[in-house]
Image 1 (cartoon, rainbow, N blue to C red):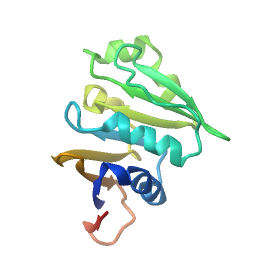
Image 2: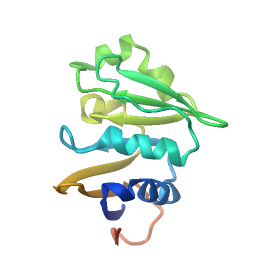
Image 3: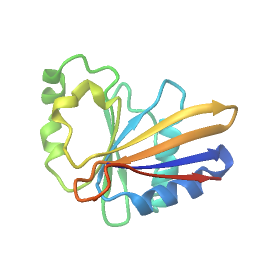
Image 4: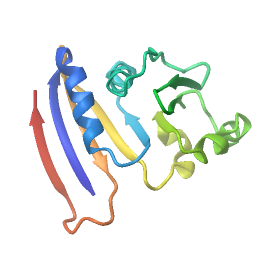
Length: 154
């Protein structure tokens, strides 16, 4: 497992998003953080870094939103309201999981048993006004070290 940590001011979010994308080697990203931590705000910055003209909105009620990329698409999920795996199956989660598009998942612990093994986790924590900590955890089995921690401050 490899963890890369960023500490940033919200005015630097676009640079952080571009940097995070340089380290990602999976198209399935799991977003952890409390209410108001900035998960959807960070997803907006990722979309911008991926050259999308779409604006992310929280899919709390729709469960999934779709955003266009120049040669791909992103499915943005919010599983906060999902109460069972059956609900996920009812809206066709397996179709999304079995495609080759980007998957951004908020509240992924609600469907934990369905999450692809190659997923990577982004955890966002509020440190103080406009300052966030972001940890990118890459679930790699090919690294020789058990943990490789790198800290970047912006």
